[in-house]
Image 1: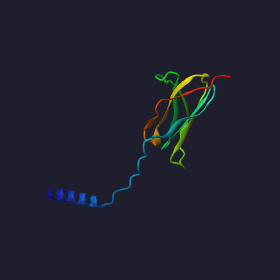
Image 2: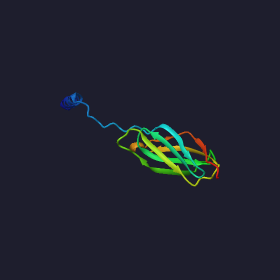
Image 3: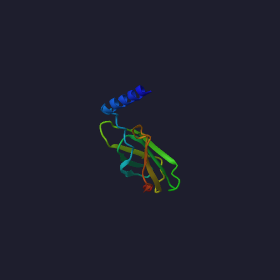
Image 4: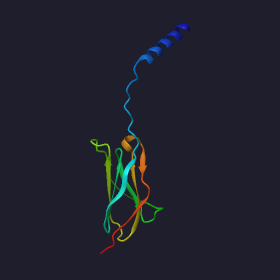
Length: 130
């Protein structure tokens, strides 16, 4: 029994003397760093853009009732390996002219971290039909 204790102590001492192994750092959670901004509005369309600190999905939830944003529009997953900041841009189509819309930007699955970033609810009004 005493020999096992001595062996266990020796293994522990050897293990503690080894340099710590280098583990890859886990990607940080996604967060919105700029925007969302309404880049343009027409009678039946709008463009919403924002920037995140890492790659993620590009989705806008919107509707005419601030408490019911059940419509969605999206663009492909944004992940440019050459830059830290990721730009997201979504085109909303088939909107009603002269109508106030509410929306929030949503970027999820940030670099596989399972994190999600949502903006506060914003608003815009489409241009009236000519």
